[in-house]
Image (cartoon, rainbow, N blue to C red; front, top):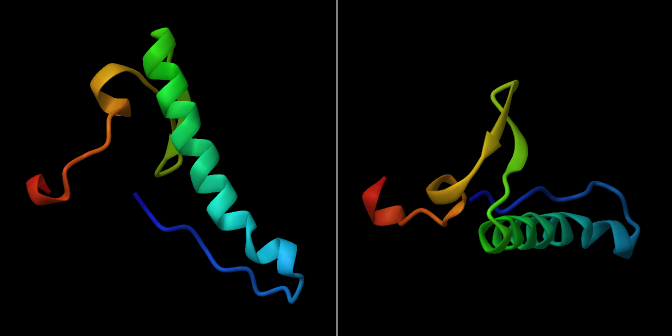
Length: 63
């Protein structure tokens, strides 16, 4: 998972946006796993719906 981005704006609230988006994505994946639904994402410009094992965190050692 990527760490996100750093805002170039001086607003302290904007500095927290990246971490909030990462947390929201994690929560969406957890909820989709619990409910058996999918999560729509755009990967390399292609719209995909991830389900099941595709939503589980990957072990970096396996990459």
